[in-house]
Length: 167
Image (tube, rainbow, N blue to C red; front, side):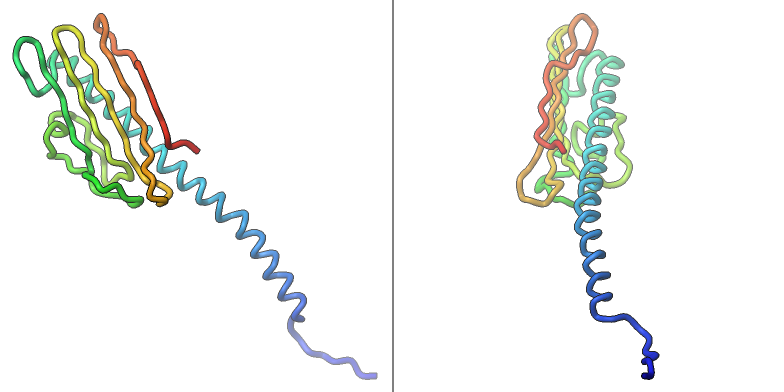
């Protein structure tokens, strides 16, 4: 008998290879999605810390917030930036929006979240809140994080924190 000298792969070998590749892809794609979400959340944490530092720095330097109402009362207000609607893609942070331009807070490039801040000072008492809103997984449901700071006896202290965007 003469043996065939055909070259190539059998159908079974090709199907086994495709099956192994599909199995590897089913493991790799969710892991990659998880890493992408973690990177977006780390941007949010970094931006909130920088924003909080900037608000505290402004208040320490000027001993008030930018909008002065007289009698020791002042406020700091920065509307959602980038403006709504929130999208799962990066958007440009607008540096010259009212309230935001008073701070040294300058994000480089585009951001995934929309940020909001409000602060009030009356005499020696001061407080401020910072919000970050985002739809990072594109499910149409906004997640947010907020942090509430109060100054007492010259020291800032975190009074409250809430986070609906965790992994």
